[in-house]
Length: 103
Image (cartoon, rainbow, N blue to C red; front, top):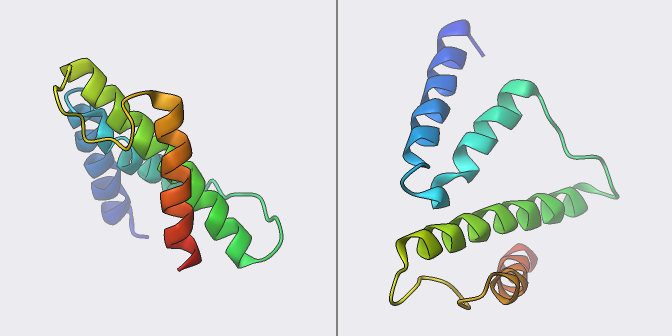
């Protein structure tokens, strides 16, 4: 990636990180930018399908935790969650996102 593109990519992550102060559900994007810029990779466990499953599960945990925090901080009367409590919501989310992965 060229230096200009890297700078613009980092700037996009920083801007979305600022937006995360109001909406934590956006947190996966700045984490993706950080992982790409730092060159972080998931450990190889089995084949490519296993790495994809692991990244899907990690992303779903980050996404659902951010969504839960957003609804909790806003004290939303009808939260956009699978379940109003965090742990059951994460368990259901793992099932939903893993089924997408299997499809």
